[in-house]
Length: 295
Image (cartoon, rainbow, N blue to C red; front, side, top):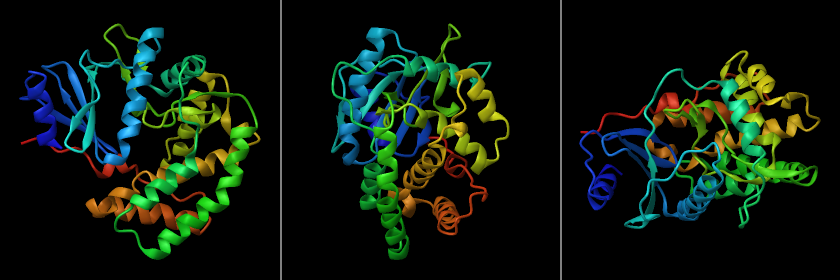
């Protein structure tokens, strides 16, 4: 991934001397501060369609001045062997850091954008989980069977969410880590891999479930107040919670073989679900895979 990032920088006639890795999950995300760009490389060729969707969304976001990060002014997507990359404008970290209150406000504005005038995938959390299950490496057969059965049981319940109310453009992974503060002070969203058309409540479930699983007390209430709605009081809250927990487990399945720490936390999460333990504490995967400096 580092070699691919340097190839892209060279092709754009940009320096990568101060490049550093921001994230390494479904994408390898590199910041190049001097060049003023962020290079985002999908880790598997299966994510090519997502990159195309994200780029099209980003162009629409710019047209309507949505509260979102902007693409860099280069031709994209960029092919990197059999992988694909997108290039974004770099926003340097600044204070004050974005808060859950900011998240509530930005989400309210994001949901008010309406549905884009081009096809966007319908929210399909079970289909996404099954795709990741098929790509999983290092997964035991009992765990694979349990997850497949869980998907089968949850699918008709999740369908209720798609059928039970108004549809909106939803971010799909709404947490403070996907917020950035522009030099003007405006807070914007990034990372649209999971963006789809579906029930708007799912974006509010992310912080609520994180509070239950990670112990971040008070964050959900603050966000709910800023947004103007408490998702834990929604009649469909239990389904929303379970769908979010499935995503929090499924997201890392293709990469279990790459990190013993991540694999151990995956097992911890799966055990809490299989035993019906709704109070078990989880550790954020991001805390287990902090990016290392590029040599």
